[in-house]
Length: 409
Ligand code: AMP
Ligand code: MG
Image (cartoon, rainbow, N blue to C red; front, top):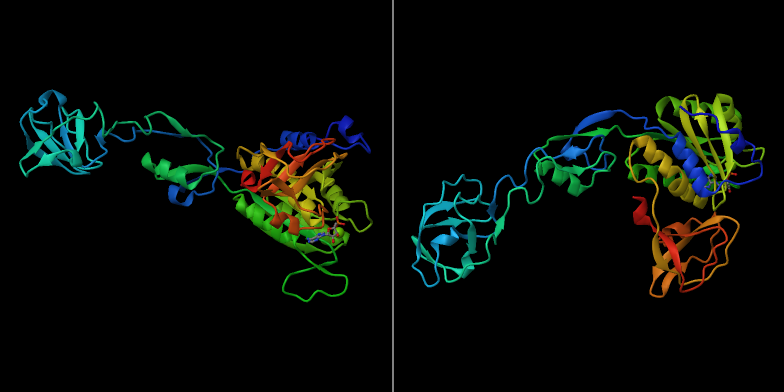
């Protein structure tokens, strides 16, 4: 449940929250709000684990051969000694008997090592007939044998709750013999675009109109994070239109998110609508782009009000909203850690934390020339952000905080 913001925070008036403060407050208010469900491992890609995955078996379950060759007991071999008779043939999937003393077993990759054998010689290093094998030299003890449990030992925790499952995690889970995993239900996020100026792509844009891009940025990114998107479409700049859409969103989703309509103009109706349906805290965050940000509840459903400018939407979605949404989903890793990278540009420090669109170049990170919040092309051009802290001067050749898009997956 959302607690009212502490008075001291509400009373700050013109002062701005830092990005770290804003994220910390949001995280204090974030609760996982989804139930767990069991899904077949084959369908679990991109889902968030609700419980640890613990191995119930050793992998591999028994010592097995890493080579096609011959298995023997070292004590049965001597330099220049006689050929060893071949007493059995062990293929992958078969169950070998114990090794007869003073013999060798023909063995194939993945086949279990017969009891009593301690060495596998690869076939390329032997001379064999159908019945016997001559082994000129022995490899080191244990060579060419994959030990029981060398991959995973029974009882080992291989994946932790809160992890988003990748393809290799599905393979690992399957290797333990598990057919299902417990995951959190996908978080449902309702999105609403606001503005009388918006027209949908595919239609002719009339005078004063622009195409709705935020809807696509939001739907795409939320889907990529594994959430279920409930698209509320566009609300006109009228109180009733905004209220109606917010109510529909709160009914259907775990979190309601809007873009636009949260700044100070008379045509910004989102704030009043949220206030009338629940509660609202309007923040000014010391971030560029993306300063106005609204947070609250529509009924009991958490509400995030992003700014309207397309780059502000992208920045606040990745930097401010993402940690909150991940926490609601029960997923770890909502806050990203930047990588040190050399700047190929200089830029004086400012009064807000800036998220600069940059690209990797031979001489260091390159800055997109127009960093305006309306220049969405910068985000497609770029490989990531440079996070420029308030007051931090960047000089060409200095090390900066780089946030490559891959960190936000
Ligand atoms: P607002 O906060 O509603 O005043 O919007 C700020 C700026 O973002 C205005 O220039 C809007 O036209 C623009 N904007 C708002 N919503 C969208 C949208 N969905 N797609 C593209 N631009 C938008
Ligand atoms: Mg607007």
